[in-house]
Length: 286
Image (tube, rainbow, N blue to C red; front, side, top):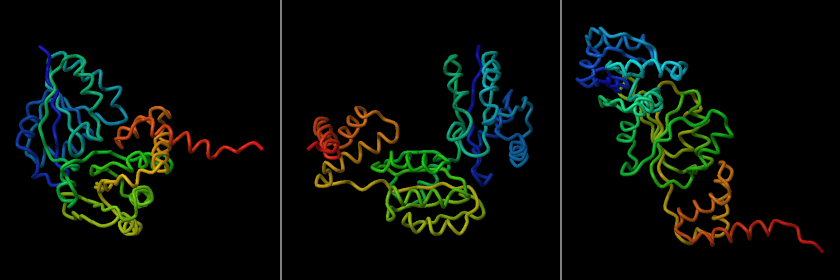
């Protein structure tokens, strides 16, 4: 009999938000893999839980090396509990490699649902929540960050990002540049904690505010792109969309197919626009 991998959501701020099952799983686990063992100790003390299982660290730096060890424990029948510093394991936190390895070995994986910064920020943002996509952390390098934002410039769904406080102003400025200065957004800081703050407004205004310095855990929620009317899908706009995808690493053929799919136009129309733009830039021989 193989064991069970339990992914446990932990409070993102207020420890009182811990789900009741979390305490029971912490007490019953034979192995507890924690992103930060010191934070785990503080959490168990706050919950009044006495753990008897073996505690090991499991963070970005040792995730690859420690995963095989935990999989072997699971294969041997152990109940392994995975907790990160806050929120749900695997969501921009360690966990994906272990889950994938467990699934490959046909080991049961379950979860203790818990608080989520993504869903909490969405709920309080005041922006549409019927459709959204989570983009995690943007790249640290400016060029890569702009490239990633260009990929979602036309995304209609609400966008959710995590960001470090010292990069917030640069990120918001890049968003204003690529997505539009007037695009609505919400910066959610220290959610469920004592100094919780939700700052709402246009991206340009939020970037100016963040330039003064911001502290704490940050989640950014950005309004999706407005619907474009048919009159805006000019050949130049089609070429621009193809170019954005090419700059992000897609081959031209793939970029043309993707733009055709997102606009509902025949691939031939997009292809013709790209060829016409290319011919227009080539010098003519006299």
